[in-house]
Length: 267
Image (cartoon, rainbow, N blue to C red; front, side, top):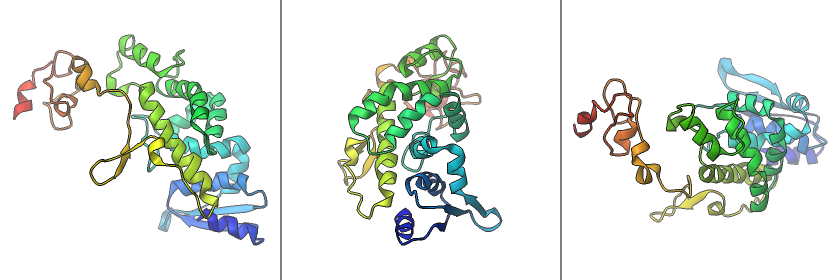
């Protein structure tokens, strides 16, 4: 779609409208207004039926400013999109509020939105870690996700499901966001993208069928190395969604059910 927009601008068109039901396209349209200097207006007909709205992406881009508009694609991918997972319990609104309260991370978002190399990702990691820490605990003074995990679990009683990702998991998450925003979306104005190998950016190829799937982390599964820390929040007996059931482990005194529903696991 944006290849056609770029071509239209090249042919002399200055006011363009595109139509979509995809939020990704709206995000890219805002960023595109900064990348195509000769484009005066880019309207997005977003939605269908009674929900159809006309969005002036050029005005949104102007309101956000150049840096935030160009950094928006990585923010969108990093906080969760079709190909990149989101942070459990933290949606776009809380991620946007965290960005507003921690503007220093804009530098990292901006750098990772435009074809960065692995060294740049490593350099940006401290800012990304601080952003994720604030996303999970706005009052935390920690700068590293591993330290924040320890503090939230041991000092504030947060369950493991509500902890930020480990650094190992965050690195792979960041790699996938970079691949999607810094390469696939950044090259959306090009006819031939010539993308890097996904397995270099947070993906692995399944041995059976060669299907790509996310590399969640380079760390071992906690259920295998620290099973005694797992616990569930079940109130009326354990179902298939129970954390302990999924890990094929009995409930313990750490669980909300106090281990009384362990007998249900074998039923």
